[in-house]
Length: 526
Image (tube, rainbow, N blue to C red; front, side, top):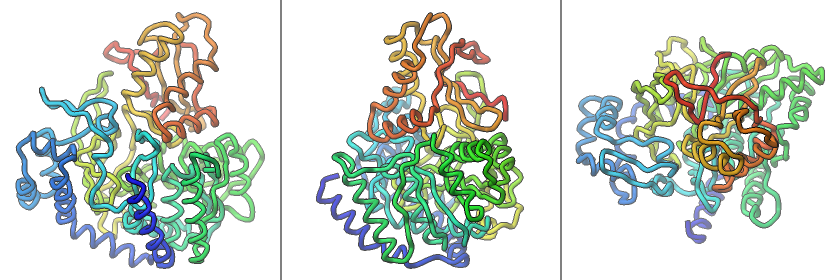
């Protein structure tokens, strides 16, 4: 984005933020907002599609053209049958994208037709560029991953209000443990919770911008946002550098002066509980609000063993954050209500290369303010679907479609950081063999959990390779994964600082169909 347009975007953010911070939402306001957006669901979808068809650079517009489908055709499908049946017809016609395709990791191929996507062409042209951010999945070079519209945060803050009241967070000491900008999770949560009557006391940050060349804009943005929040009597704390290995610092805060509330990833929460146990700290009554990776039974056991409770919602940052909101009455540890006012979701059965049968989730955005547009975006996750019978605030607001057992099947999702398949293939089949010897079947990344629920990322290297400096192999892997841009560097630094990646000398796992795949997800302990 040109510098002048960037300045205009920030000026608009600066103009809108004080009002955002000084207008809290009540439970009744939040419920009405969700119900109103549900009632306008089809119109909102067609508005988003109008922006797509008006953008000659949109990959989705090109997919529609290839399929011979016009905007009026989609409108007729939606009005005749509804959004989800229309999306199934579009998927069958080739209108869909995979996560790897949207990130430029592999070309789009539909028969003999192909397209290489520039991630910037997925930007939602209906949204305003108020501040830029990046996530565990971003690829954008030059430091720009995507832009966030404050109106999008205004919409999604309704979920924060219902979460806060459903789980009894209001009035309690709260903190977040997410990276500072360019990571978006910390900024989003700080702004969301300000709308719900929750006052943040601390911002522990795995990464924090400093006043030095290359980070000045990020540091200035955080400083200005915190200052504006203070002036609005809705404090947002400055990020305090707290790497994953410093979990004891967070545990001490959580245990002090009455049990607190921490917003973080499940892996970070497990680290905090383990640190508290080792230090003899009592976390009875503490509460964790999770997002960024799957929440499993093993992780939940560790949280409960510490005397704490947790909720886990489902987020995809490029699509505006929450896709499903944790149910306070859910039967599964990650039971959540699909945010049907903002997204539509379908799935269909597919057999993976290792013989597993999954039902990939395909997500479509309905809000005109999300950072990126998605139409049947296959996000690399699957889940069990259901219908709500709980009567919780989300159910009462009209969110009746539920998900649980939400798992990734072709991407790494550890510590809230995400790398997708093609990047891992290049690492394991090219980079490591060229440097350390062997071939494509001698290395494999294994995502697993130990008995405490702590996420572990193992790099299996075949014993046939002979002597290896395991620390050098791990460093080479992280250097490559962090080489494509600032967001990847942030993710690799967090994994490095937390000791997340461990090299083990063992043969890679062989799939049920006899293949050695780059990524093996060990679900044996769930």
